[in-house]
Image 1 (cartoon, rainbow, N blue to C red):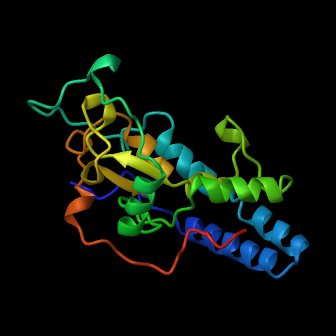
Image 2 (cartoon, protein in one colour; image 1 turned 120 degrees about the vertical axis):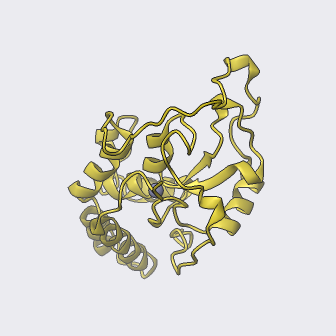
Length: 203
Ligand SMILES: [Zn+2]
């Protein structure tokens, strides 16, 4: 059993610090410095790390086990209607899990904060529908609400079934169960607290 699909690389934490610097300069009114730090956080190695976990199948990352009696894939009409938690449910999950991936432990940024950054610094923070257009730091730190029992396998939106994760850990597991990917259940570990606040003070 393992805790995560892939060990985070140190550059991810460097990128988070650079984002923090960008926000500090933005709040002090130095837009040029803020833009420079946002650009510096767009680290190629970070982009490649995320892409390796949520991208093409890699036997060393996407190890699969055949589990006897695993929950079957449900046809769309048999799945729980509401796919994602609402804003209040998200807030409760963040209060419990913090701004940190429950699997790999990297710091996280909520989509609403990334949107503010893209809007305020469109030349420094790129975002688009294709991965290649996405700013490496915001892509890696992209907060997700991940169903432990996947929605396609009958998972619901209950507080107990959702954990806060990074995008790589969420999309990289696809619709497989923890057992099928040989992952430990993060709900059985104590939540680790950090000072990272998800850059929520960026306004
Ligand atoms: Zn993660």
